[in-house]
Length: 67
Image (cartoon, rainbow, N blue to C red):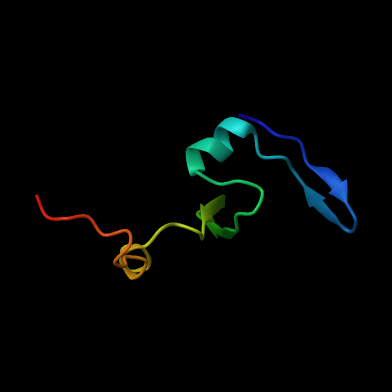
């Protein structure tokens, strides 16, 4: 897939297609970590869910009984 760079202020920008956003599970409020590896631009979501974050949200009102 190719995208075209466009001027945005003093920088250049490109639009991420909807199917790419969906496959990364990101939306307009997401943050991406950009890096370059072997001459390639890598964009990784920084809002990935971590187990510790999910476990910390467990409380008496949302915990399920053991089966």
